[in-house]
Length: 555
Image 1: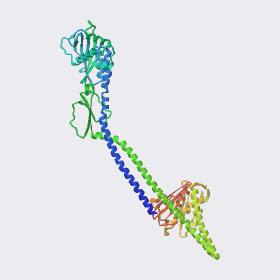
Image 2 (image 1 turned 90 degrees about the horizontal axis):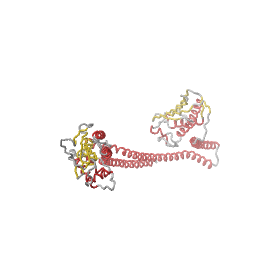
Image 3 (image 1 turned 90 degrees about the vertical axis):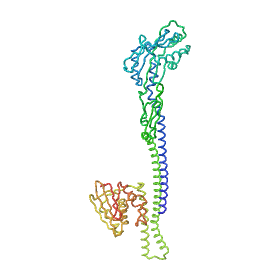
């Protein structure tokens, strides 16, 4: 049986060990794949997330282009230098990338102009030109006036948008209403680092402009038009980095910019700026060590999840191994219990059978033989009855199917009766006892007697012949009755201390090879619990053991 037990343990352990090794390999492989996935994911994020940086960084420009520029049309061409100055001030304040604004206070008529565009009887030219923002943001600098005698060449910005205006008017279908997108695209001109915008005339004015081009109006009134040219500085765009742990450095560079350091130590990517900034790009660069931090921050929760799953599997494996071992131990305990119980029953039954056969086969029996066989049958029946009573009492106490009787006992008399009964059975058993703090005690004398008998029997059974001694002390300590049973026996190994109160458990030693069912101390434990007390043990191998019982004091 011991060989089967060891083989079972080895088999269980090897199976669980193999399972844990396989799970560990899978765990390490999973960690490696998770880290590789995290690395690829973050590297892909490094390439793709630049779009978000561009969108958020260029958002003020989009707001300027789509919302602020159309406000020029609200004035219907009647902006003067003071009003234009206030408008430009708000632009310079809200949009730092606008560095300079040229304001063309212009008019459309069928009278030729010296500075501007003349097409048939359609002329478009500036009356005054002002500059804002280059030197003194809050004040205007007049660059040109029609009344000046000095020469001034109107720039390409004005001429380009004037030609665009004429081209649009020539192709205009006056039978339909043009869309806002159509008007906006034809009355603005986007060039590198510059946006020129002309206020959008009313549809009636556009029809008059078309008639001017057809030379059907003579003479015609003068129409006011305002043109503003915004000089843009891409380096003043505020870069918004929503992924500071991904992009270490972001800067605006010309499209032709090429970094000198292209080693594997760095990751870099780029994206072109839109509209008037199309000659520039956002350049992103991060060192590998910087990216590794973001990879680890992404990998860490994945690793924790894998570790948690691995921990659960290991725990399941340990629990399975533990349950297998417990089942094996329980099987062995049950086997030993049945084997020992059979042995306990077999001895008195065999003696009874032999005595019965002798009586049966004898022709006549003397009075001495009758007394001898009667005594044998009586003693063996008592043994069987005692064993059955112990099993029955154990079951009744476990199921709490008996009542606790309370009688007043004199503790000295109770101990002396116990001592005397054991001295009669074992003349070589040396008893001593002491009592202090109380003389009477209300308890169940039958259950307390069972406790004393079991502990005394154990002290005698597990002591060498020369050390069969037991000292019993009874003291009243802090409202509790404390009994101590101190012997000089073989002791209990520290590894077995936690098991001795379990049912069917037996310490393997030379004194325990025959006839121990493994119920004695478990029975004591159940008795003490039933009496609302507690039992503990201290022991040293080859020195002896001390069992301590604490019961509530009732008097």
